[in-house]
Image (cartoon, rainbow, N blue to C red; front, side, top):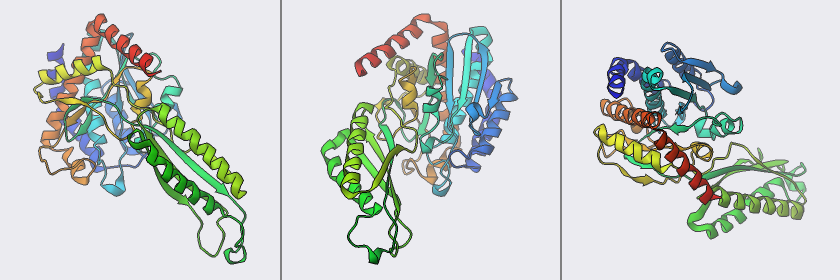
Length: 389
């Protein structure tokens, strides 16, 4: 079956490149990926996938599948960009191409092998993503594994990521002319004091966590007292447990400052939070073996990153991997740059991406063909959850 997949994908190579290039040439910001979503859905529908657009009433989300029964193998697409910074600076266009290539290849043999291949479009990754919403809605409840590979400047196994809790802190006071009212606190005083205390406290967490803040609203002119001031922050920690502990401290801090300064306050989530990534070591082992079988020998150890991944939340629900594949042949190209975005449509990147797709497909077939391997994946997943909680 693997040779049949390779033969079939060779006939789709140009179409897959065109998809990748379309996404590259037409970058769209988070939750505004209308052209990307339409292109992808039409692409999949033309290849006999059952496609649901506006999945869960999200305008740029989709759910596509082919086949029936178990196991259910899921691939994920992310297709938002940062237009103001150079487009697909982290290679979401190529990540999506890898996932679609994998789903397409597996779909070619799914009737023979049994099982179901699922492809889910996940908009808005740069703004927290939609995967945690999918988890809460039970979308992953009957999925066996989630496989994805991320373009990068290195090739390595899937490691972990940081847990992220995004909070918005709002203070409200009374209005008036600033030069007529010196003896009462403003909403901005509350926000700035909160930030100063957070900055002092964050030093005590060392490598376990850090907190990044911005002042998102603080008035329009010094002439007027700011009635409402707002700050946003990311709690970034090694574990969700640590992040939640810090969140509770911040909520208590804001309540104390609010009471002391006689201000109204509110602390709330403004983006979906993300848990740390739990990479399944059996899936890691299978994927790395299959990647070597496809000619990529130098694979780094599991890579732990300081960024948050919305896949992290999924990985607490279902076995996942998120390995990295090097797509640049120029050591001077940095990840997260316009040059990296442009590298995603190079011939080298396309070949590397195809190798990653072959490895993901072979990993999926390993699980479909072997109940023992699938059981091992799930047993490892359950053990990792027990160790965590």
